[in-house]
Amino acid sequence: MRIVLVGPPGAGKGTQAAYLARNLSIPHISTGDLFRANISQGTPLGKQAEAYMKAGDLVPDEVTIGMAKARWEQPDASHGFLLDGFPRNLNQAEALDRILKEEGIALDAVLDLEVPEEEVVRRIAGRRTCRNDSSHTFHVEYKKPKADSVCDECGGELYQREDDTEETVRRRLEVYHRETEPIIDYYRAQDLVITISALGPVAEVTERAMDALRARKGAVAE
Image (cartoon, rainbow, N blue to C red; front, top):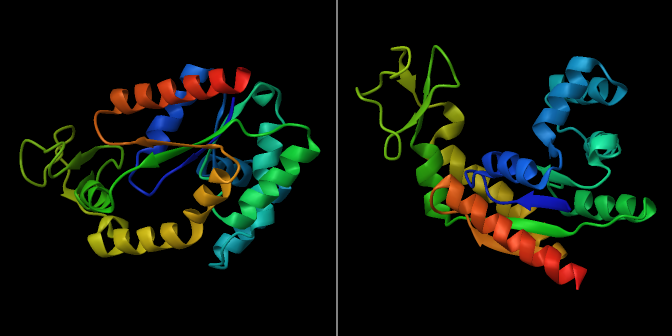
C-alpha cells in the first residue's frame, strides 16, 4: 500500500508510522529522516537543503519533493511506502499527485490521526526531557518521574523544552491548521481519507489504524 499519514503535532505520527510500516512490510519515509540522511551523505539535494537551513530560510518544496521521490524510487519501496511529514501543504500534495501519475502509480489511502486540540496541548506541554540524555522523556500526567524534575534513568534534571511550551504548541497548531490541514480536504475529494481517533494506548491506535487500512484495501480490491 502507498499511504500518506497526517495529523496535528502530538498525534503520535512518528510512533504510529513505525509500527504501521513494520506491520505492512513497507518503508517508513519520514521527512526528518530524509533531511538528516541527505545532509549527512552530502547529496546534491542535501547540500541545497543545508544551505537554506543555515541561512534561516525554509527549504523550498521542490527540494523536499526531490528527496521524497528519490527515496520511494528505491527497490524496497516498489510495493508501497508510508509517507510521514510529506506532503505538508497543498503545493506538495499536488506535486506528489503529478509525480505519482507520471510513474503510473497512485496513493491507496491517507490516514488522518484525529486528536482534540486541547489533548495535543496537554500531550506536548506536559513533556519533560532529561538534560543529560534527550531520549529520556517523561510527562507530568502520563509518565511521571518518581521524583519531581529528576530523571528516573540517570538522575539528570528534567526540563521543559522551549518548543514544548503551551504558547509554542498553540502556534504550531495554527501553522498546522493553515498549511497542512487543507490537504485533508484535498484528499477527501479523491475519496482517499481514513480518519481514526489517535486517543488511547499506542497498541490500540495501531490496531484501529490497521483495521481501517485492511478494510480500505479490501474495498479497493473489490
